[in-house]
Image: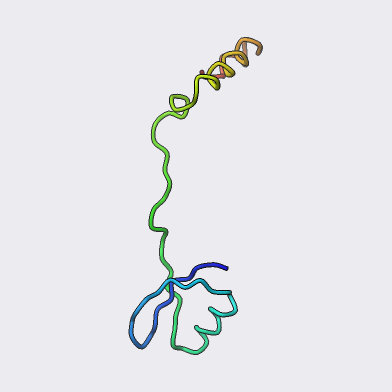
Length: 79
């Protein structure tokens, strides 16, 4: 079941509610509640270079792939 942010029309109070879609639709149909659309509180972002944050084993694996690949492909593998 999803979580909805619902606002009481009479009081103006908002609450996060864990509801079935049918339950949410019933609440909105009564006219006492309305759904409030919000953005996520935080977004996951990435900073920095992923290669620098990987283990040495992964880097060694990429080096082995680079050595065994053809010369054209080997130049495109960044270790």
